[in-house]
Figure 1 (cartoon, rainbow, N blue to C red):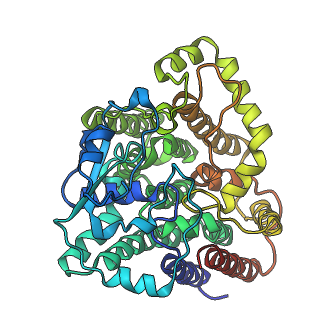
Figure 2: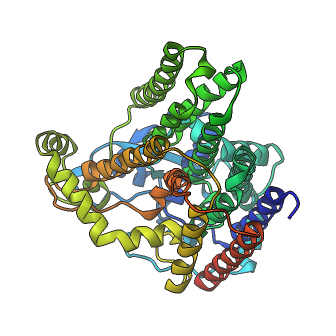
Amino acid sequence: MKNPEKIFVAVFLIFGVIICLVRPPYQLMDEPNHFARAWQISEGIFISPSATQEEVLKTLTADNRKSFGWKNLSPDAATEKMFTASVPVSLVPDEFIFNFKDNSPPIKFSFERLKEFLTAPLKVDEREAGLIPNTGAYSPLAYFPQVLGALLGRSLDLGAGTIYYLMNLSGLIFVATCIFLSMKFLPEAKSLIFLLTMMPMILIEAASTSIDSVTYGVSFLGTTWLLSLRGKSESFSRTEIFGLILLSIMLACAKSIYGTILLLYFLIPQAHAGSLKKFLSLGAAILFLNLFASLIWSEVAGVELATSRQYLGAENIDATAQKIFILENPQVFFAAMIKAFSEYGLNFFLGFIGIWGANVDVHSTIEFYILYGIILLTFALTNGLSFKIGERFILFFAAGISTVAFFLFEYVTWMPVGAEIIRGVQGRYFIPIAPMILFALSTLPPLRNKNLIALTAGISSGAVTLLTNFFAFY
């Protein structure tokens, strides 16, 4: 197969565009909140303002429109200020917004409704506000593709729905670019990279306003680029040093828990930096920059961890007390994490390959997940990359630290103090670290005709995703 990476990316884009247009607006986890944050940034509001739920509800129009953001279900937290955003009413039609309180089922869409949404005038002055406690904390850089789409749409005076889809497609193009470059950096693993990106979860989220599209793209690109530098024969260029700095900042701005990808820097031969001292100094500098960028943004934006007390009215939720408990009883936290893997391991696997929808309830058949999982594992074992034992350890270690980090986050913000199990972790959280884990499994000779096999499996996955999405919403 000649130029397989071009064919792979073309297939990814074709399915991504079709699925983007077939998936009804906002029928994805937290998408109204992500969209509102991206739109807010496009209007020059880089630091999200705060308000109480009562203050937000007072801004709604007289015909009792639904607020598009989180609904604060805790009476004790009703007066707490949370991040909020305001967007044009035309961009958030009532029927598209999932109502958490009544556990709304997947909406039924139609091509006629899609046409109406695409042609609806924007009407920037008619606004609606909503709470966005989870997305208001993200840096403006985390949404830059979608922001560019919003700016382009407004400059061309496009309709509300057209701008919405343009923002989604901007995220898709960014991810496709990262995938193409990833395949160029690690040509041995291009078929495995393609299979990963054709999973329903990535196909759905890549063409959305979710921050996950940028997180996936940056994580895949950063992982493959750093691994490609292992074979570098000359000293670091200024461009490469700038690339390390940019990667460090982007990982901090997207989701800082995946900053452990930067540990792959230490797989690069130290001679490329000139001396051991310079090599270690540069490595320490990019790790520090990642942490510093994350902390600085948190201070500037006034980021506070919203907990399940605000979201769901859960009791005995206290982030400060939970942190103290973990420091005093780390064994309880790790036992809770192990128990979560034991009880929810299957859910993690299914969510990793793809379960979507506003209520995370759209999925394919169990046979598809098992078959695609076997294909992924087969291509991981035969991906063609060669690693020493120490290098495999660093790959697994970096992935493990990120895993502990997102379990820790959920334990602090979602679980009662001292809980014996951790809930709230979703399978899609493992996607950014999946390349490190799967690459490290390479032990067998590459498959014959692997690109053709991968293409067949990837197209099949795209077709299953499209059909599953169609029957769920039409």
